Length: 242
Length: 363
Image 1 (cartoon, each protein chain N blue to C red):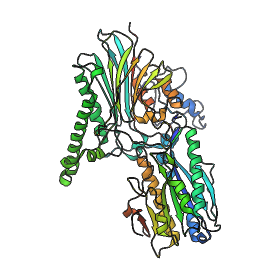
Image 2: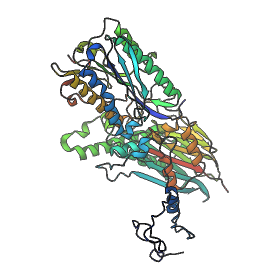
Image 3: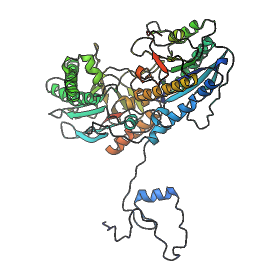
Image 4: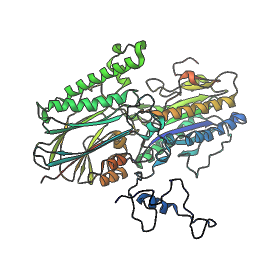
């Protein structure tokens, strides 16, 4: 069914709230969504299309803000607080079920939905668990056989402090091709709270760039060029050495 | 009736409401509700028994939620492309071989909200012309691919030269025998030539424009194409149309003013994730067509649109389908038609182009 209800660009922000995120880092992370709201409020073209969802994860993962229009005047932004360890697997599993449910519902309502974009922010290494399988379930799709997850997102991993660049780099998706994504990693010795603020800037500038290209670009997200990222952060492609 | 503005005592526009001479200046003037004030303005009346001196007004069309963009976008100029118009429109009546009223045409191409907001040119285009013997009407719609900085030029070449080429062929062949692939190849060459010329103008010796291959040129300028050939020869009210589309510009029959019949598969129908990838000239795909042949009669309309309208129209069963079916049951005034093409609907901000043809009953 295609009734021309609207065109949507879904963004998901997934934030690590394990114990190590407490203090400045969490405070900085809690300021990301208000900045997104301020940026969207200035751009009527983009705010008509962008839908934002917020998931946090520690030992478990929770939907803190279901995919929504963040300029909705009845909306209250959630405040994140720390809890437990660092389960990437729980985050990927919840993200997959959220994307599937959200896209199906929006399509049933007659909307055209562009491929979702995920910004994944972590300050540590994942728990010793099989997060790799959960990530494959989220991202692998074979066009020829139509097997896997057709709604797979464009995945942008972002790391600060103790995040392991070698691990995070494996989360860049797509890793190759004309629509390859990037990883954003805090440079050694930088302040992690400031790095999170810089990552928020990258998120917002790619959202703004995506709005300009959304009419004809089917990836739905344009990342800033490598040389254009704020200081304290470096951008990497999947084949870059970290 | 002619009235002199000075004699009727109307002051300058920014003059406050005149003070009541009887009560004097001490009274606080009555608040006139805005709606009444608007109504008075719309009829050109200054109140009381005076006959209106003018009528009319404009309310923007919107379907459902107009969106924030529909209300807030301030149109920025497209810097550097001063001669590419923001909006173009036409309203024309065509006659058949015996001079009888045969076909009404309305056409409009309107810069989308997104291009207005970002100060980019309108990349859609349309064109139409009759053959020299008045036997056929040829119409075209093209949508410049937004990734290319010169795509509006590709759209212009495709529509104008496309109509001219097809009209030329119709001197020799019947519409069924039109060499569509040859036409597309000729247009492809014209787009490439135009692209090289623009690149030489803009880049000078910085770039080897002649050394660029077809796909490199297509990255700079490309446009979809939709052509329709309508037979005006017969003294009949049923009109046969031949159509060919390349890319996501789409043709429809609005049957009896009620039902939308798509003449091509619905875009993204059944797709899990929406994409906007589309075929566009100068790249001629290995498989073209086949051309469609369709008959439209009085009460029907043949509707050619860019995806700026095709996307919100969807499969025609939604609110936009109901809106356009209602306002295009009969040919509206040309300016009104352009305003309808520019309807506001949340998140639909692409350039919009429509060419609509209404066959008229023969007498």
